[in-house]
Length: 367
Ligand SMILES: [Zn+2]
Ligand SMILES: [Zn+2]
Image 1: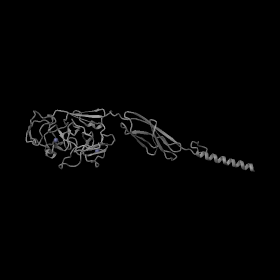
Image 2: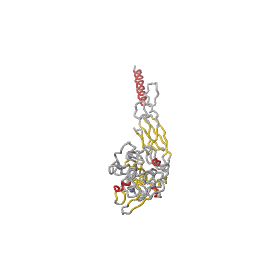
Image 3: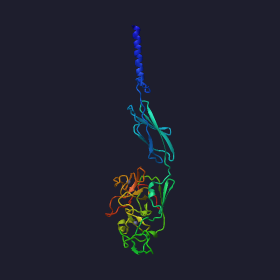
Image 4: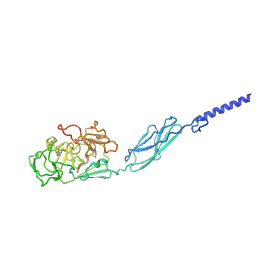
């Protein structure tokens, strides 16, 4: 009887030990009453928003049939970047341009179960391509090229659209601020892009025709312009180059001469000649009228768009004092970047100033 009890007790102890052990055994087999942990499901990784130095690693959710909480560890080039992530994305910075990267995302259920998915990508080259916006510039009038980390924009200054300021068969006279009479002689034939003045008149037009000015303009800006610590006011003369090829001016006509006094000489696209080449002061109706069209590039390297923004198909509401803000554009491939807009505040009840300043970046001279 005593022996029988001992044997029974031993059996019970063995049974308890076995049961306890099997509870801890996460890799146990089915079929013998053992609890089995299942690893998280397989998942997929994609890499997006790749620039010269940054990328966004994104993955689909690895589901866990046991309902365990799944976390993720991301490894890049053999080094662990982050672990215990509960989100499905990781932004990576400080990458090297033109470099191939590979890594792995590993899911873990906290019970020893895991699944993994590899990924690879290449960072952009610093000199691989021009910003998409440059494709909008007139290819006859402008020449745009990369030079190291800079972009060089050359233009002949001529517009690619019609204007009453192209040479024409009507002689006109104008009186300059010093009282001198300036004669713009009649040409033998009208230039093919000449149109009769509508908004202005021969009596109001400034002296000189578009094709009287023979020259070139060059602007060199960073291919990756940055906001400056302090802004810089704009001056007289060219402050930007429009997509048409002609120059962008600010809202002053000359030293201490407000634009108001010269508005009558502006053609239908708010441009005129003199004292230098044909240039725009106000919304360029030839290709932008209350829309998000690209107007041109400002001398600090930031692009100037129409009164509306592509990011919300409406007037932007978060513009700084220069008409700038950071958002996506139709040329930014989903990235947010700083750019200017024509400010949606009427000037003389009917016009919209292109760019009064200040430059929020670091301006270069247009030579
Ligand atoms: Zn002017
Ligand atoms: Zn915008």
